[in-house]
Image (cartoon, rainbow, N blue to C red; front, side, top):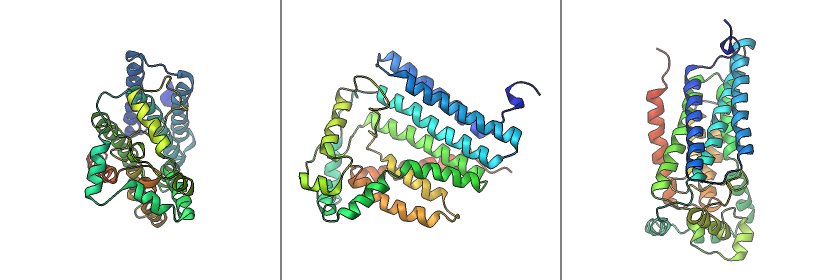
Length: 303
């Protein structure tokens, strides 16, 4: 055998997920150019090619070194980081959004459920150490995703890993589609909190940041760069989706209880530090359940 296939071997599911990433990446470029968005392309292109390189290393390791677990981890990481990279450009090329924000409606729905973001923040301000811990939990999502990829690859759970990756891709596509139709940026853009509470909790999504998100939605960034890329999809909550993905995939492993404990804490962390409506979390749960159902039918165990 000659050519790339003599040195590179991708599994069928890996191959079509990489093609999906390439398709979304091409669509992101076309959207940015078609909408005449200013994009600082070099760092994004470096990320794209870095993803391809990491995937190629994984396929090479599988074909020539006989290390399937390492290959699963490398290609899986490439798929996750690659889709994250291409989706960032796609999302920010959508700005400014045409539909009005629905946050005021979501705040009313939250109130009907007995939830108020500013009141929760005020309560959390009385426990600054706990608030700091929740901040670390909130920022652990991407690390948890990467550790889960390594865990599943190390345990040779190929089907579980591919379902995990596909659920991550599908849920992000669905979350962005929903958010584009009915956009929201979270209660921090509409509710004020005392400065003392902000300092005590160290909130990431505070009212000042909420105002920045509203500006992104209504005006858009002057130039799309990695520095301006941030989490903007509020409804449904992708942080909760990632938490559910980790716990779901860690079932039956030694990592399940730590994952469960950490991601139970992700609920208040997402509400406070993430500046989310309560209804965002329920929407994330629905999107996750649907994606798991689809993954179970598309990616099956060999007969």
